[in-house]
Structures are given as C-alpha cells and as structure tokens.
Image (cartoon, rainbow, N blue to C red):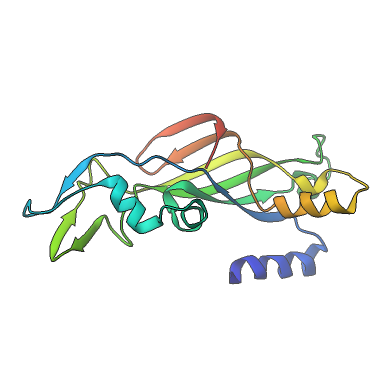
Length: 181
C-alpha cells in the first residue's frame, strides 16, 4: 500500500501525471489432483485440497489470496514517457511479476495433524515469473459520458489479457498469445 500511494504522490509532484500505473491481473487456475503423502505415509491429500484450504473455494476469496493465479503489473504510459511515441495513446507496455507452485508461506512444507508434508522441489518447485506484455490504458479512451468515464477509470486497475513474453526462474521462456494471469 505504501509503495502504491507513494508512487502516486511522487509522480503527481514530479510530473503532474501518472506515467507509471500499478495494475492487477487474476485468472483462476485448476489445481492438480495429484495425491501427496505425509513423510510417514499416514496422511494423504490432493494438491487441489491444499489449494482450497489455503486460498478458499469462493471466486472473490481466491482472487484475493491465490498468488499462483495473480500477477502484479507496472504499466508504462508510452505516450507520457516518450513524447515522440507514434502508437495509439491507449497502447502501453507493462512489466509483470508473479509466482507459481506456492503451497506454503515460505516453502512447500506444512504440518497437518502432527504430520509433516513436504512437496518434492523437483516436481513442485516454487518459481517467480517476470512478464513483458502489451497493455491497454482504458483511461486514454475518450468519452463524453461521465458514467462511462468512471467505469473505464475504475476498470483501469485491472490488466487485461494481451500478448506477452514470460521468463520464469525455473529457466523457461514462454511466448503467450494472450497472457491471462
């Protein structure tokens, strides 16, 4: 919260406008039904059950808590940053940060009923995702309707699906025709 508020105030004081906007994207994912056993073999569960216990079952709850399905974005207003920008005013670029295979707070290890559960780091390695994507600045769309203006400005906090290049700390480069989360 401090970074977001501070960024807004700093940009307003420096430039009188927002050249960098922070956005959020979420796309629900389906968790594996793989069965995992505790270290002693006395307890068994599915990864989907662990995800439901951590992130909840309801859509809104999962949108707020499921880090595997979220990406936080820094959207760069190309028209404001580069005055010679010849592209559409509503077209920007965004840098995103996300994560995958997060089944515990700091590591994929937890305890249930005095049983330790540890996920295999090779099969379920936690990794970060860095994404470069096109972005759409809905606030740059001209309209005379105050209602539509409010709607566009409100929805501008969400990063919409767009073509992207992703680098994951597990060494993978991926091109997405439409990056969803």
